[in-house]
Length: 137
Image 1: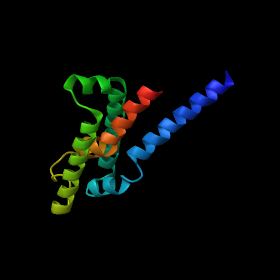
Image 2: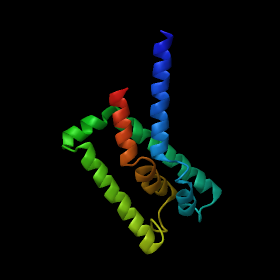
Image 3: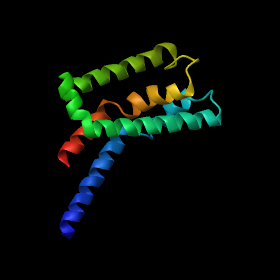
């Protein structure tokens, strides 16, 4: 009995650590700071809270319904990863060309949803990892 608990604990820790590495919240701090540098502290908190809640809800949705959603639309995991990579490439090109990701008139809540929550925190890698972890464990 104790061996099963230890084995499940190790599997859970592995899944959480893998998802943490894929989401890379520490690596996204500079982008968060650059996107919110003209906002006051209250707006930054709103952006952070919005991004965290949206990212968590998206991961929950894909954990429970991700494979079914993909099969309904006929999307494979690999094509989803490719399209997500293209989306990240477009965002990167937009940052290089214009020096910013979004227009200045965007609200703090919309900055928290796109691009911070999706696709930076919950991108194709995080979604795919979540779906694989649910299927595996």
